[in-house]
Amino acid sequence: MMNIIVFSLLGLGVLFTVIRLIVGPKLSDRVVSLDTLNMIVIGIIVALAALFQSELYLDIAIVYAILAFLETVVFARYLEGKKDGNS
Image (cartoon, rainbow, N blue to C red; front, side, top):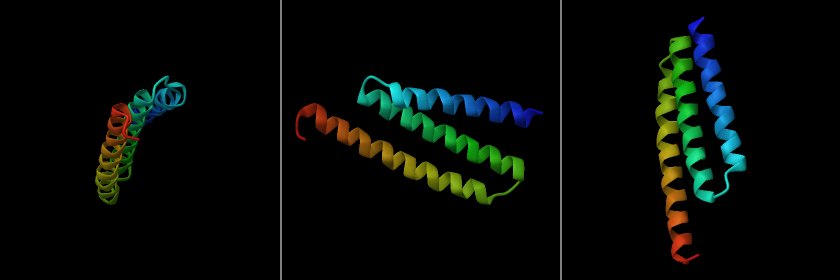
């Protein structure tokens, strides 16, 4: 029963985040929502690791978290350069 509640709330978070990703009036709003979506996906992977009792999912979550962090840094650099008028 608890798994249903957890995955329902995670799904609701994904829904709201995707709506903000699509509707977001500014590019910075979209970048923040994309980062939030990445964190929710990491949470889903960790919840699946607990559900299936598999440590492989935790390794996948760690690699995904590293890649999501790098993605956020790249987007932040892009926005910083766009704000200065360099691109």
